[in-house]
Image (cartoon, rainbow, N blue to C red):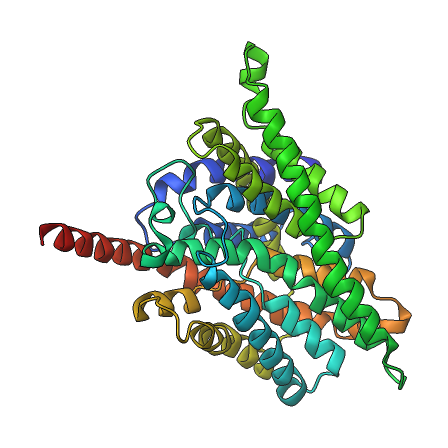
Length: 433
């Protein structure tokens, strides 16, 4: 069988799965991302004329494919958020971004140096790539589609629906905010053997401050322009109605590209653009079209990436994984992120049950693949230590994502349904009084 036909078969199965699996698995203790990984493993393990994907050899493909699915997911995540943007209502998000994520990066980096015996730059990179909550795989614990009567519509001070809002907003912003630490790892590797700290000032001013600010400003401007176009020029022809929602993809690509061309963080620009677009007309039905188009595109791309991930596992992605690497991966998923989340939420008005879920469901996924591929693709001979650790980093990250997909994927629906029933029960009790 020719490899071209086999590829078409894989693509067709992935698309069919993206359509069918959400219906079949809606009430089952199984997530369709996990099914995709299993299917990818089986397909590439079969004696067919296909070569399993190798993210180390095909690092540029891995970078751009994961990049595309993440930015589309960021647009979908932004369009789900029905809470107006204000510092007080977003306090949980700031806690997760400014406290939980740095703690996760720091502790993971320390584990890298002390347990794995890696060099400092490699340890920082490991911390940076496992820190972000993934906007793609976290869909089961994210906010529901826009313009519905969802948790985010309530008064933010009551903290109802905090879980879905917190994880959606965190996943939307931390992909961009983890980028400076990826660049920090590259900078540390390049500065090995030098005593000057000029590189640290350059990193702080450009990678940390300028790029975040530029991404935010360009995202805001892009969101305003697209909001004006979408809601100022309603679809009136059959052709325009057929293309309903496609503006979401256009806004994603344009805001991302514009930010990157201006030296800003495109991930931040896309999410900010989505938030601005969502805040423009709260009650407009067209948000359904925008959201659905973005989510459909995201799910198709996600299916492809996860099938390839399963294929990479079949091809030996996890072969370099050591017992200490596996131990560090388990500690990151089950100890570091949950504890960091609980520390971040100390003193907040979020209930203990919600704190536990928010802290435990920091799902690692496709965004982490992108960061590692990007860092390795950017590394040159000057950052040789990162390239030498590529096999080990991919193995540890692959293991972390696999564990997260299995554990969080199976438990997410049950946990969220239980908490939703608990909250609704409290509402009924309060109304009775």
